[in-house]
Image (cartoon, rainbow, N blue to C red):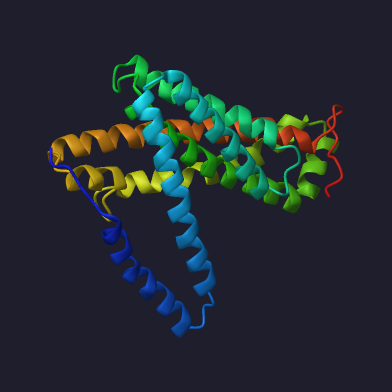
Length: 255
């Protein structure tokens, strides 16, 4: 396999494309130049710092440090998704549970099946992808849940008045929210290889891997991500919808 050696000058040269993005924004008055600059600066600092941390973990090759890093990622992911689901009360605990279950279930399964070795070099990047996608899916699902409840107050109260439990009244809303959280990844999986090549496959091809190996690894990751997103979105919405109701199956007053 060919090693890919990139210098800092190569990274700086790629800023020419960032300049194109800023120029396009300025030309059309999109007013995104400052945001682009912040995004570039933050990505450089954050990825450089994470790269150093990962190198230390790889060098130590201790599973304790690996699981510690993944736990931090779960916590940060839950906090990020919680900040996006402003219309749903008490989402932090459901998110922590959902992301934790998604990470442990999917990573545990691929390790148990022997797809990846229990080493930091495999667990860290795969775990990062799993947690990141699970966070995004959960945030989208909970956002949709908040909108569904806000717009469907009359229908919910009508169902409750007819004797439905909170679970029965919320079921259609939870179903649509779960679909919203999963549909983007499902659609992306459908079009993989037709419209665009996924990042992992591109990275392996650039590193000199055989196309068949690159495709097989990408398929494994796609299926792993589908599982993790579905688990996280399902758990977070199933737990979070209850916060809209009292123990007597009455709809709480929305803030």
